[in-house]
Length: 251
Image (cartoon, rainbow, N blue to C red; front, side, top):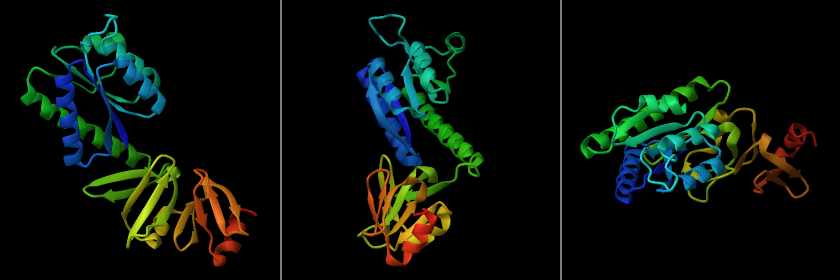
């Protein structure tokens, strides 16, 4: 999921941007989420650095800061130091800013003029569509090297790299599956038998209720019929799977 950051010193404009971005994410079913809406560029930079993840940045050009040089272009330059492939969109009252971005060595996806709301809102929609399209194209190009598992949730699709998945588990709810990564749990409709066919050889069906990523196994306790995963989760091992698991894990 791509994190979205908004930085504008006008509260009213932040609200407009936040509401429209949320609406377009919902309508488009984009794999994105607004994680911060602030008027403080330092707060944005601190959070983005901590996440260490490619992001989308909506930045006001004319940030009214105590230090006059810390405008939106300065923020963009700082972002490029830790997120060189992130998507930067400038929100501005000035139409021609190409020279400025060249001067600061900041590649911007677009410049959205804030003075005309009727033009600004479609521009936000178009930016998110372009980003979603680019991400899918990149993912398709990398599929052979980094395959992913697609989860349908409501009206949106999530593309989770298989290497990030810890395990799948059958949910107590009928016909539903739980997918675990280091940072989240997803609940979706599915069958473990079908997922097992899609997931590939790195995933082991250790129990009728569990399909685990062998690369994410921390330890195996065959005496107690348990596997401990890297996130601390305990997965069950069926008796019939003990010999195969011992062979796979070289126990």
